[in-house]
Amino acid sequence: MKKVYLDNASTTAIRPEVIEEMTKVMAEDYGNPSSTHSFGRNAKSVLELSRKAIAKELNVPAQEIIFTSCGTEADNWILRSAVKDLKVTRIITSKIEHHAVLHTVMLLEKEFAIQVDYVAVKPDGSIDITNLVELLANPAKTLVSLMHVNNEVGTVLDLARVGQICKEHNVLFHSDTVQSIGKQVLDLQEIPIDFIAASAHKFHGPKGVGFAFVRKNSGLQPMFFGGEQEKGLRAGTEAVHQIAGMAKALTLSYAKLDQEKKYIQGLKTYLLEQLTASLPGFIVNGDANGFYNILNVLLPFAADKTAMILFHLDMKGIAVSRGSACQSGSIRPSHVLAEMLSLEDLKKPSLRISFSHYNTKEDIDLLIDALKGLQ
Ligand code: PLP
Image (cartoon, rainbow, N blue to C red; front, side):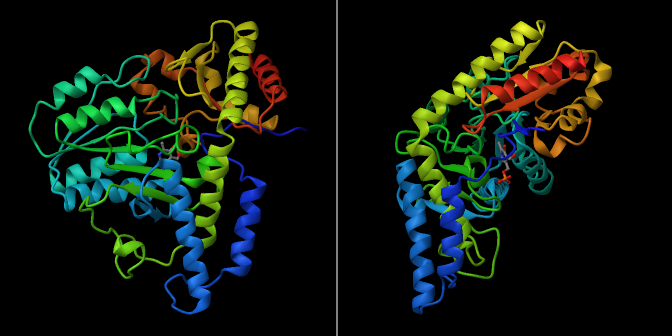
């Protein structure tokens, strides 16, 4: 049975060149980067070259990249320190953020009694910018946290525009860019933004490593204590091989971006054509012109198919998702779709199909055949 992986917003296959790089670093550069002997210096050099490579892709100074264990850690750190150390008293976010942001903000609301305002989400899953501007009329010390590309429906925020609005209102701006880093060029000199979070496993790098971009002199303080790594901002021995793999993955993703983006876009168009031909009546959740590697569709099936659909597809070797990965095993409706769909539609099966350059049209044909069999 051919296995079909169409869940690339959840995680991606590691590029062979990345595995090669990581294996080399594990075998040869095993020193502790904080040690002063030659083994340590070698590891330190791998670390700093990786930081430089990542910074170059984002057009920022290397010291503004801080390595973390994942995207979730970067989001948690930035949000928590903004409240605790930068004395932010209000966070403006949205109800369609990833739980790494949403749950952290809710906890901070309880812990520090900060004000939390949720900006309105339009039916197509985009952020209502007019409402954001209205909310910003309140002069409280504010951090705006809005994701770049939504991981469930692929809607895209205009980062430059929101960054400009935040700058004009003199508030801090954080964006969870986990789904867009490595898949879209981001020039952080051009975009007025204070913080971003990224995760290597979303761009064909290893799991368990990510980074935060933190603008110089931000005043952010560490979340962990016990070491001087990352200029004291993130204590703990750096995962040198993971970081080297992340840098390699990012460099390759941007080097091949034009070609791979065009290819993936073609797959998404093909899927839409095949759905139209074979399952008329399907509806795109979010924006049909959303991010090029994600398509979320409401299938024209009865609600009683919802609980079993992923299981049936899995039996045929096809991996897709109902929403974010952490919910895929449960039949709890997605908090993102809950903001866009009627209660009745929410009960019906929706699927998130997400691509990488490793997918083919045959993968889509197999998915469509399997779905036709479930009608
Ligand atoms: N933010 C978004 C938008 C994501 O899609 C994910 C992963 O699902 C995360 C954060 C969490 O990243 P990580 O798995 O590196 O903790």
